[in-house]
Image (cartoon, rainbow, N blue to C red):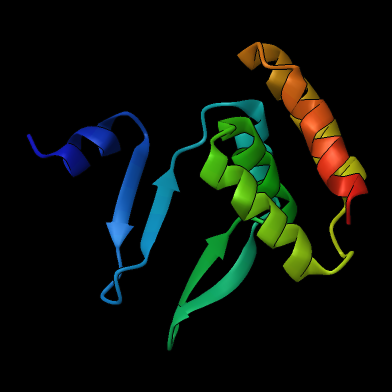
Amino acid sequence: MGQRHLLWKIGFYCYLQKNGVPIDISLAGLPFEEKVIQRTVLFEFEKGCYLNVCSAEDLVVLKVFANRSRDWMDVEGIITRQEGKLDSAYIVEQVIPLAEVKGSPEIVEKLKILFSSF
């Protein structure tokens, strides 16, 4: 069984575009993930091919929850690109229970500090 097939069985799939950019696809398992699906926005992936993608706020929440160095760099980039348009209160509100479940309450404070620096 290939790695992609195995990942799909556990609710996650990584697709590599022709230009080499990876796309992560996951199936909702947590209540927050169900909310992410409800809040998706339509994005034209290729001419005539539209995909529902998560909002910038929900992407920040997912990356903060992952809590990897590269994800924090991505969060900084998203905050910069969104130029004050992010709903930071919503993001923090969503991260708090996820951080508790994960046993990583420090990510909430790290996120608040990051928001205050912009």
